[in-house]
Length: 217
Image 1 (cartoon, rainbow, N blue to C red):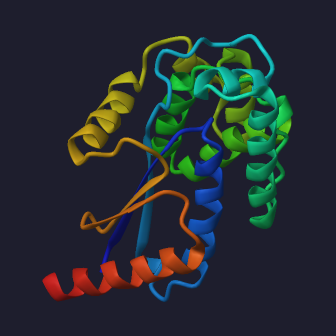
Image 2 (image 1 turned 30 degrees about the horizontal axis):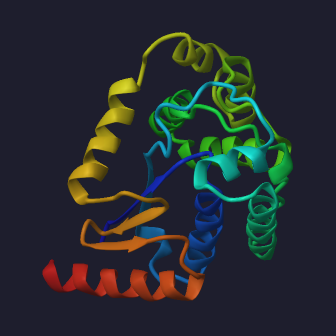
Image 3 (image 1 turned 90 degrees about the vertical axis):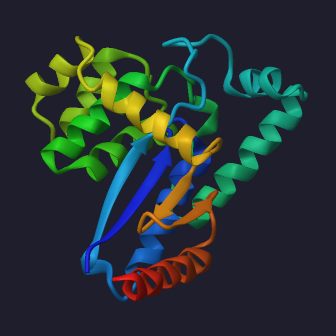
């Protein structure tokens, strides 16, 4: 029985990378992992973001949420500590922000080439661990090639509007479903799970949605 998992996520969302790892952990424990098809859906936290915003990460966060720079830095440290529990290495002080639309278009290319998860992973690791400029075309091409995409194809995407419609279709579907925050997991087109839930919660949701899918078959 085919079982679809769709995940709405943004490359520059720290909780999304944590959610990715937690879902991977959950799938390792899921009895029907071999029947799973996982698709990454596009979602932009800030569609109006500049390609390369100015200011330190804590300063941008403080400005966005109306808190002090010290409070913002403490929040980033907390998130980095949670990420470390999932085996992720966050360097929040290096994150640059930036517009993620082109990154999502490359992830769409990755889906077409059968390596979507690898492209998603490389872009997120580049952003959160290495301080990669996620809005910079050359940086995107480099990361896409390291994930396994042909350089000519990756460059053709960032230098055009290819896959723009696919990104917008994902975002429109999110609006119709009522998704206004990420990560958001849709299991078997029946169950929705909001947020970077612990692996135990995700395993339970996977089991429940699989059972419901079997009953409906």
